[in-house]
Image (cartoon, rainbow, N blue to C red; front, side, top):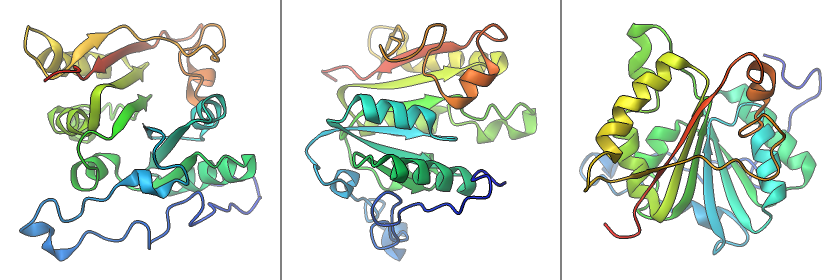
Length: 232
């Protein structure tokens, strides 16, 4: 996968891309102490007290670059599992000179579970994640109970999980989980309408590279926001 189009990619390890020293392997004690691997990702930024948001699955980084440029007072952590996309996005961030973005090459669901402390994230962005369309692969879909449980734990009171997909079957799958986690009087999340950022172009929701190519007049994306109540 030559995303650099012949250009050597530089993830800016230790500045943009997380270094091994900043993100060491899980300790052996994790077996007996599930909290042993926790670390505070806000410390990876020069201005650690700023608002903190996470994007899961950055792809080619178009959303990340735009949202970080439009919100210089917010720190953004991009988590990408595919190594080529991680390197490509980190290289773009480095060349753009954005110091409010760090990139992590990791499994985002595992990061939330084992690494992320309680109530530190203001927004989790999940846009056009892999729908894993074959039934035998559905277990790999991000949206399921284990993910929603960890997202809820990691979000600050009033924090949001923002989700967009253009895959109808995956959306139907998501709706079942949304119902369990947001319907009724006492549920972990409040379901809210998705507000399109002001900087996004007409006819788009989040202006990812995928959305620009695959949606528009061809597909109509589905979107929602799950908000963690301020109390409870």
